[in-house]
Image (cartoon, rainbow, N blue to C red; front, side, top):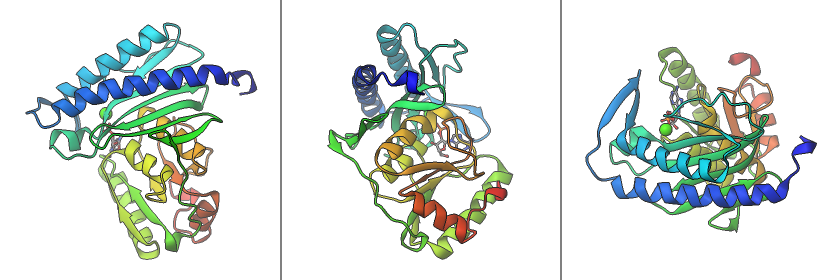
Length: 270
Ligand code: 2AM
Ligand code: CA
């Protein structure tokens, strides 16, 4: 990745990503309590008119600013253009919450080079929480430096997760939560993967994991965790990239070692 140490570009990309997330966030916030048109796009998987409207704004802004970059977005789909920089966009992460007027959702925007996110923004428009990071440039929440909790032991940790839609994986997740509830401090869940991972970066929780997640759910928040002093890994034990289905976000590398040594999450499980 040495060729990609073009940090001056990152700060410009981050500025555009923040402004774009805030603009789309204003739209999502203003339509949050309105009646929603909800379409079932897959098993236990929905989209609203606001996901599409927010996505339109984000795609327009990114295309204007970065005509040479590729952009993949949850609703618009995969961009197969082999560009040096590939943006991953989730216009509303936590659509199930949004559609039910539950206040936990966010906008997630990341720029990825090869397999490394270099810019990441997660914006919670109701609370006005703007989590942001650039690769090597640190992580911030509303401009203030962000650090993970520093927790190193499972017994002290607050863990978080979301449930897969697939019935078999859902049961597997249930088994993990059972083990962690037995050994950890307690469990929290928001229903938005990007927001949950950003909360690990902020030190509000210590562990987050999932079994069937997408790049637009985790690229931005994963970078924010890495830049806040935390660690991204995978349940299966392979190195983390935004393209893995089974990420685990941790406050510290020592916490991953403790999880593995207690056998709560073995690489062979997945
Ligand atoms: P989505 O609502 O944008 O699809 C809740 O389960 C969180 O995990 C949400 O952020 C959801 O994103 C994400 N997620 C992504 N793929 C999932 C899947 N196959 N099953 C369940 N959640 C998924
Ligand atoms: Ca979404």
